[in-house]
Image 1 (cartoon, rainbow, N blue to C red):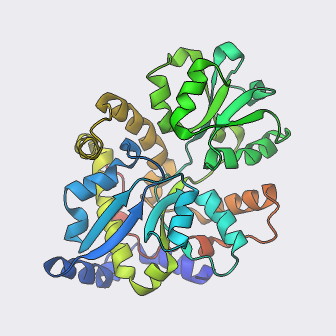
Image 2: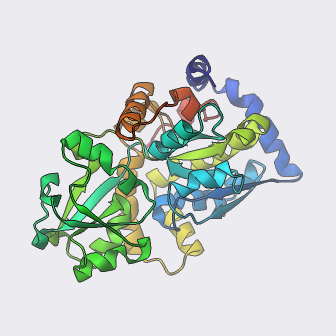
Length: 347
């Protein structure tokens, strides 16, 4: 997809009739056989992705002619590989990692972003104040910071280091599993750990917030898009109506969740009964800040701004010393988004 096609796809979004030809085939399937579609989350089931489960529980995907399966993920980087290998049709994955993936596979990367879920990336490092961690990134110098081996917040630390003009080895990484990250902080095995901000509510529930410092990557001068809905290029080319149908149903559920999260919370609790509803409500309160950020409220959910994407591409390319970088149009195909009036945030 070249830049001209990317820009023309944005113009299409202002016209609902332009998408009518895609909507009709998907809905027509509801009276016959449903189209199977495998979707991978970026991580485990929580309220961060509750709109997907609302769409499932309310039958929005089936109304669009789809039989959607939603599986847990192994990290927002692994989500890219799952689609690239054909194991999944669509997934939720990190845009910065997608930039790297395209750079390693120039011209033929089999994955594109089709809907920007996190309008801003919720990347943070959370540290213990009693270990000298403050709201200044300089306080991390010489500390021990826990992170999983493959996760986007850790992978993108060099971008923060570059912005702050400090060495990448500013502190010591301690590799740990997602499942025990809270424990190693609470026990004091490490001084801090990386998180998606909304993933940290489990830590906040076990350790008083006034004992913790939250260092947001955005406060280090980074303005990054986070996880997006990804689709295989093959699916986009051969079954665009299925991608459009999935986005319509998901967008519908996301707008409803932003207006009233309770039905979505009930849906995610039904999928994962061991979750604590109060914690999940707190988690979604953080998630919505990043999903419905200022740009999304102005441009509509799912949309990106070309200049910001290009800045992110340039930054990733520079920090990781990539030989080549993809274009905005390589990364995104937004031609299948619902029309803008269907993507505006009402709450």
